[in-house]
Length: 451
Image (cartoon, rainbow, N blue to C red):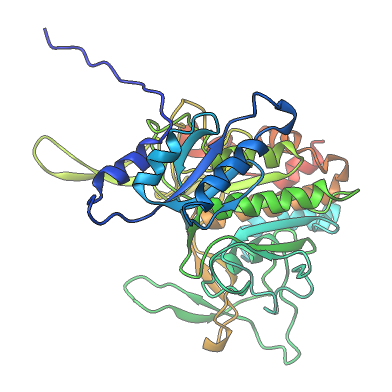
């Protein structure tokens, strides 16, 4: 009889990814590790919450000459392994020490696929009066697509980049799917887009048949830059960006921001901790419970290879591949489908598949994410728009749909769970597995008319 395998579930203060990185270092030449420190509530003064522990942790680290950042519930720093161990001994202050994971940046025809254009004609649901924050690489606010669309006064940079400018292009492309609209040029010349062609390395520049529009063209965008110019960033920057947006509403007498788009994430290993309960996931939960709709791309890790007994490698879909923070239960996690014929071609091969590590159904919805035409930062190259693919492009379709919905039904502003429920109940079933499609393809027309 073979010996039965028993999983070892151990409580931790230093999370396994941090401990693994510590153990891999040369003790003679240690290097700092970026961490997120979660805090304990004061037992002697419960009314202060975690603030007393935060102060003690900050003092402890500053005495060791570390640069420290903080949010309401966390402390962020890059610490040497020996000091991580020393901090871990302060159990009266420190709850857990997590790795500050590196996050990665994950239209013309697609507006018809999600029935946005039908809603414009029928309900005038164009996003007027609705505000959406884009947590990404920045937004090129002076792009002709964004005529007074980006709120510069409320935009904020929490990345390592020195400016709010988008030098990567990802955030501008995402924002253009949500809102804004190209206006006819004075010389009546067509807009141009860089499109990818099979068997060619360089994109071709093609004339567009019309003026590209975001799903909710009249919505306003707040540019919250949390990713650096190379398209990567830290979980701590995303946490601070979310906190900033949440407090815009908290400190105002009316709703300043309706929702957040996060086309970013990092791989999740179910054995590290409770799925959907990492520090970034918990910050997403706070944002939703404060009244914000948070839409997140589920990742592009749904495809890989497996090895047969013969040694041959064959392609396979990859389950349990939803990235953090899309694992958050209360967020809307979005997968990708074909932009014109989703019933025929179904879920994109690359789109991350569920379930979550603890068995919940994700993604929640799917939206167009293949060969999406949206804003480019490369106007100097002779085109205003370009083609990109990924769940990063699918998520802003849902953000734009939510903005359009709220402009038609403002009574649902500040009610993210109700909006998510409506969208999932009115989605179009593509007859694919739930772990591929979630509730199905978002249908704005059905959502607006069904309330």
